[in-house]
Amino acid sequence: MTAQRAPIETDERSGVLHPENLPRFSAEWITPAGRVSAVVAAYWTVSWNLSAGESIAQKIIDFPAVTLSVESGNVPAPLMISVARPGVWQRKVAGEGRVFAIRLRPAGLAVVSDLDVTQLGGEQPVTGDLDCRLHRLLQRIAEGRTLTEMVELADDALSDALTRHPLTHRQRLANDAFDLLTGAPVATISGQVAAALGCDVRTVQRALRETVGMGPAEVGRRLRVQDVVRRLSLPDARPAAIAADLGYVDQAHMIRDFRTAAGITPGQYLRDIAGAN
Image 1 (spheres, helix red, strand yellow):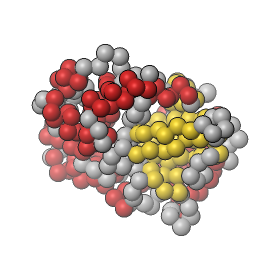
Image 2: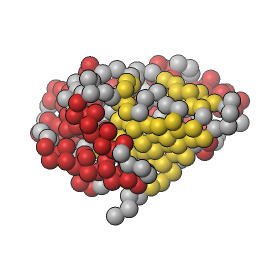
Image 3: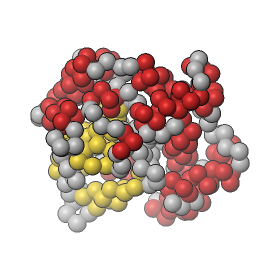
């Protein structure tokens, strides 16, 4: 069955600052096979072919997840792993290149590697010295000559890994807690998540810290800032209304969270967008 593909739109939660840049790339979401849905949230791909001397300094606020990627062309390394950075980061895009990425669910990292998420930082190349299991998996995916082949190889490799390393109860709990946080229209506190899952708050906190490296409060804060970016990037954005819709105590609270993540205030971001148009 052919995987479903859809463009990454400028009005969705992607963490991309200045999403007006997206049409300059070929950026798509790809739906993974159902048999790997316990470990993979989504595949995505970006390709670019910029003219000589042209470059884009793309800024991103990370989604709170571990991402694996197979890259070619003008890229840092052919095989990469990244975790959510505390603030905005930037990649300079130039020349020609392609990235096929795997956004893992909380349970995913333990299924595909022996790495400790709390010991990882930013992004780094995946080598045999870093983690043999993960290196072999990404090398297998990199053998695909086309995007379709890479998706099929990823489905198979991840399915095999899941068979060898089935999810534990705590990993399933982490997945469920993360789903509740990502699906909530406004901020969801730890106690609400724990109550919905029929466990105590400390259990939820431990499950998420062990799998994504942060507790439910930090996961929720990062998701909400991504929603602020998305809403500010839309026409006629009104910060006060955005703060109210997303459940902030007040506009000042939203401004603090946004400035901590993006390094600028929402007002400055709006002025930057206006200047780019």
